[in-house]
Length: 340
Length: 287
Image (tube, rainbow over all chains, first blue to last red; front, top):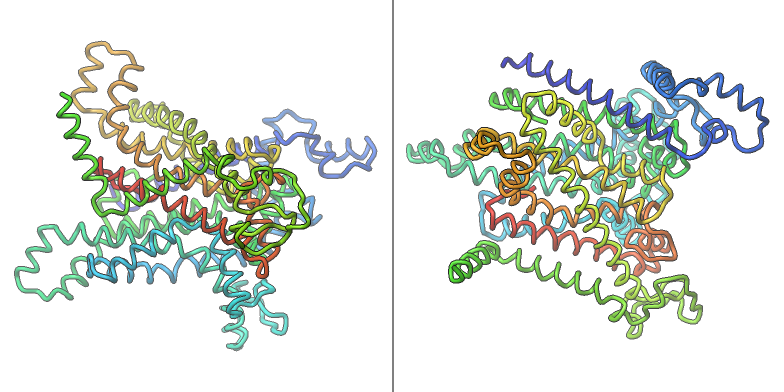
């Protein structure tokens, strides 16, 4: 199967899946006990006002019709009003999304290099102290829930070794940076303010680490085991026996095939971070989409919950498609397999 | 026959314990189970699991009488921790007891009817559940329902079965053309026979390995839900809600959160190590 055809097929199935997700979300939204009009407007309104609201929001129609109205609205970016912020949900989302995207980008990508480095080091020093240390830390970090990392970081780096800005947020109030991409570190650099960029980076560092540590160690573990598996293969034995130096064998022949399994799980890992960010953002006071979603969930703000879940589902699906494509480019065999 | 079985046991133990770490895992898991089962007996102040106020003993740092200190209500943290293990383990067992059979049947059916509409429908449904981070939808479901331990279990179960469906689908679809399956069909075996007598024994290794690993992760997700207030409600103790209480008093009263955090890490670590050992017995590569 050609690369393009595989990608198209993958996209088509993602579309079906996302449509299914909207149905689940809609059903969830409608099984909330209570009258949706009452929930949105509060207890102190007359029956007439409620009726008007129902009329305006198609709440008197049958459920399937309500779904169609909701879906067409959602496709146009209209998710209704948030009961908490009293603003259009889509506006809240566009305000809060960049913070989460910045956090996930930092937590998702730079640590990959660390994961590869640790995995390769561990494999090359199999059963030496470097390997044991990596594996020991790996076990501990993989077993630590993200919110526990976050709590420990607040304690250790917020109070005991105060290097972390304890108030939270994305930037100290003394800095004003231009709004270009919504990613503060980048914006500060583009605006020529390296101090502000450093400040934004410090705010970002610990939440990103809390999100990344467990995943990074898992990626390192997978890199290690696939390095070791491939090292036993015939073609490596052949190259080595031809007298190619070990470092060249590692770099040119062993690394690429061993990285593929890591790449395929990185997608899942980054996508999962959008979920784990729900707690990390809350604990670090990070003003992102996930902490907005968390507030919405705890306040039963159904319009906002549905929108956030849908947006995160979309981000999740797109990320895993992107990674599948990278994997297909790296490894032609992936083009035939059903990857999800 | 008996000697053979004994030999097989010894061989399995040898594979299991290779490396040594899985023996530590087994020890941790056994210890946790024992502590949870006998918690009311072991706990020095079992009455502290509820709404008790003992102002005279409130906010004590760890000392001889209170190994892990006391909270602002004067309740013994160690006793509450022991009692909370019961809810956590119960959650792990119940969630998997429902999620695994459901996921298995769905996955095997999809694998058995590979390349038909049955596979398409079932696996698309599975894909839908896997298209959102499990935590996000579990939070949303738990929030829509009344917040309590039972509903947090329901929310986690709804998010957990698809993983077993995918695992079973993978195994079943690769076994689909094996001779023993085809012969069973030719001799007119019922579908239930094929699923439970032919597929189940051949999927069992992988499912058992994943279940052992997942016990830790289910407990971890349960603690996460209860941390944000969507699990066991105070004053009843749960690992998550107690950490949430403790966080408010950082850094001065560090003992309120730290011991519980470490406990969660040890539980997940124990099941991970055990799961790796179980995987070694069956030559299954864990997650």
